[in-house]
Structures are given as C-alpha cells and as structure tokens.
Amino acid sequence: MGHLDRTKKLGRTKSHRDAMLANMAQSLLEHRMIKTTDAKAKALRPMVDRLITTAKRDTLASKRLVAKTVRSREVFKKLYDEILPKLADRNSGYTRVMRLGVRRGDGAQLSIVELMYDRPVEVVETKKGRKKKEKEAGAKS
Image (tube, rainbow, N blue to C red; front, side):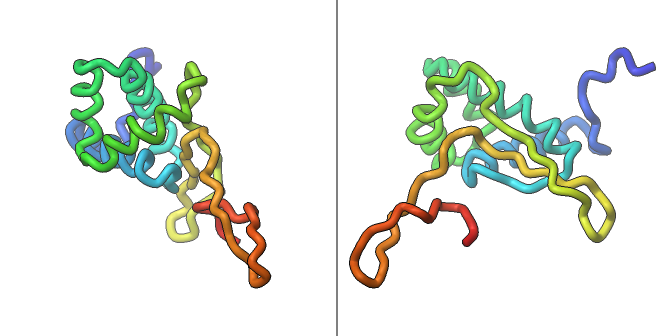
C-alpha cells in the first residue's frame, strides 16, 4: 500500500543516500544547474528548498545547520554572498526540475535541476568596440 513511504530510497542505504544528496545539493549551489535522473532530481528539490529556507534565517544556528550539508567553504560563502540576496524576495520554490528525455545508454529519465534566479549577464565586446549584453553566463551559443 505504501502509506509510510515518505522518502525515496533510490536503491541506496540511508548514509549513502544522504551523502549523495548532500553532494548534489552542493553541486547545484556551486554550478546553479545540474543534470541528473528524474528520481534523484525529485528527491533533491525538497532538500535544497529546505536548505535555502534555513539559510535565509541568517543566525549562527542556521549557519551551522547549513554547514552540515554544504561542506565546502567556497560554496558556503557563495550561498550567503551571492545566492541568498537573489532569492530574498521568494518565499519558496527556489528550484525547478525540467525533464529532458531518456538517457541513451540505459533509458533512464533525465532531468535538469536549476536554481530559480536570473543568470548573470556577461558583457561581450564586438569588433567595432560596441558592447552587447546578449550572451548569458552558462548559456550555450
């Protein structure tokens, strides 16, 4: 029946699952977008949303709770210095999961998980010296 199936097991033990999701959350905060399977993306989204909500409290206790998951100092600083100010006006829904299709090798459903803030705009100079704001950092041209 599945009444008590609150967590997706993802075919892993609890310690392995917690470590994997913490690593994925750290990668998401570092790179703004990651590509993973659909089941992992759905398990990651509530974890990252809770992490950002905790970080927005901006107390010593909340920073220690966030540091338990985000172990890299660089990513921790990036979260508090760059990401949180951009998400200050949002109350929830900090991440988005978009489906890509199936992986060619094993047929697994692939998804992209991304943080819901604007991409930084990169200024590109043309040959004539004029500046354009067309290219976005992280976007492929």
